[in-house]
Amino acid sequence: MASSKPSTNTVRRLIREFVARIRGWFRIKPQKTSEPEKFITDLTNISRTSGIEFVSFFWVREFYSYLDYDQYHTVPLDQISPVINKVSIANSMKNILSPLGVFFPNWITRQTR
Image (cartoon, rainbow, N blue to C red; front, side, top):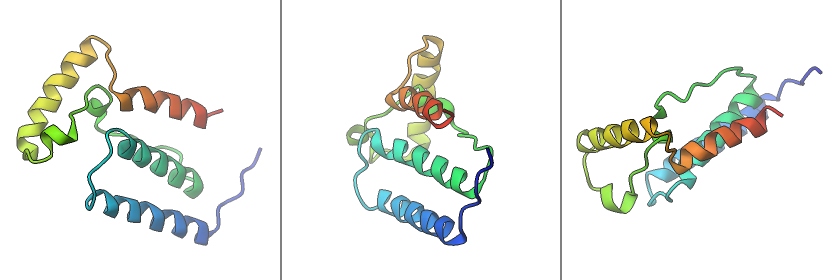
């Protein structure tokens, strides 16, 4: 089954919406797991619409760990990163997924049907 190529206007609109959402993340307090999920769904939808065949979500540590924003939002990244690494390594060895880690394979499975 051949798919039709999206119009340039459709791709531009999706990119504008995606950029607006990213800008919004820096202005408001992020919601616990919905913002990362929105990022994944937006990027997947833009990729599909644009005809991109492969997208790699590089940092899989977020699939195994989640740090509460209220607790860590004022901590510098160089101090947060070791904490995320420690938690994600321990959880990956026990096969414990974060909420994003549970969401991701379900989302991707639905996209391939």
